[in-house]
Image 1 (cartoon, helix red, strand yellow):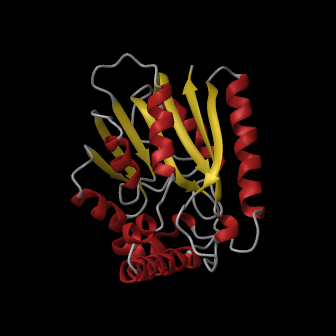
Image 2 (image 1 turned 135 degrees about the horizontal axis):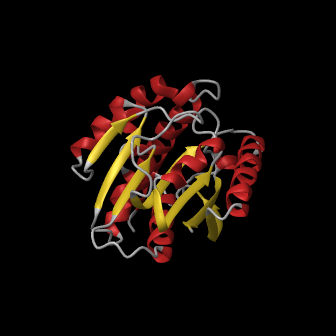
Image 3 (image 1 turned 90 degrees about the horizontal axis):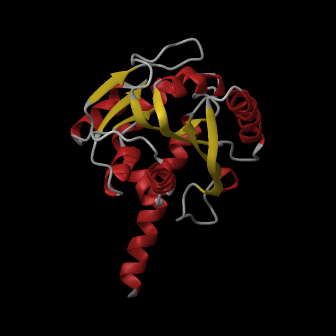
Length: 241
């Protein structure tokens, strides 16, 4: 690679780092769904995340499709906290040819997603442990929730509701993530709650863990990226029994 191309790539990567740093800096753990943050950053969200080679959608799609056991001909997927649709774009790249519905709490992010014409229906909804998704039981073959279990976003107590709308033999993939720039305490706390909720669900025969992995959320980072310490996520794939 010539030096001008290398310099251009570096400049682009640093620009993406700044965009993502600004998003993470705007997130407030006590602010339900962080509506104002995502409204401010929706138009630049894809540029920031894709510029840093956001790896999780690839892992999610691979796990979900590999372990899928439903026999439906026309499969349905639900992208929970879909944002701008990066997760669904990757799901389709990996061969999913059914319909996908999106749920997210931010109108501006959903407007960006709508322009991509990849969703059947888009639903604006802030999901809380007391809320009920607007879908019947046993509707979806795949459910995906990428990057939403973190401070100021979804609480792990929401997990049972996601299994409710999933068909038997369907797959659910999610991760616990951390936006804390200094340590992983926030991630540990989220993981502890998620572990307790999922342990109860498994004990009651609702679901079974098929696969889990840890990995860097972004694969293209400089050492100066402010949130490098919080870049490792735990991803889990469950099948509904």
